[in-house]
Length: 174
Image 1: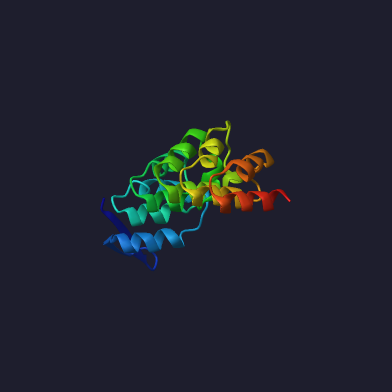
Image 2: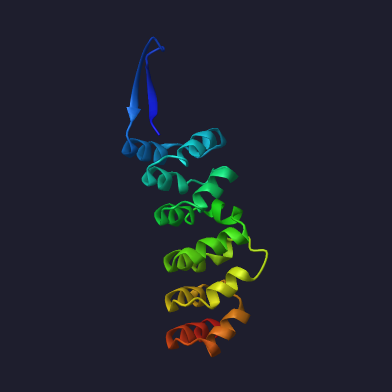
């Protein structure tokens, strides 16, 4: 996707147009103020062919629901990881979207476990998945999260196969 910027000089009597590189788009996205007037720009850039541009946009707090949905399903884990850094996106992702993200990769599951309290989860599927994740690192992140529920911590402290996970869960319960 080619993006052209227009530079307006003085009173508008001189105008210059130039195609922006992906690097310039990333820098521009990072400098844009996050307000409602930029949602259209962020939405457009969330469709860009370069994952670096999509990743730069994914961190923004003022994204449309469509952009959040698109970025949550992005083929690049870097983009999804960046999306998980946005508190606004974490709040607006559905339980099924969060579960799909967590199931993609242990690193993404760990990012979900780190901030599980920020997601608007309407069922126990995500917590159950994280609690029983095959990667002990994900379960460790869940157990170390101060917002993890006591019921989950009790199960991890007594039933987890990994000693380190059990110790962290036990410490968090104390």
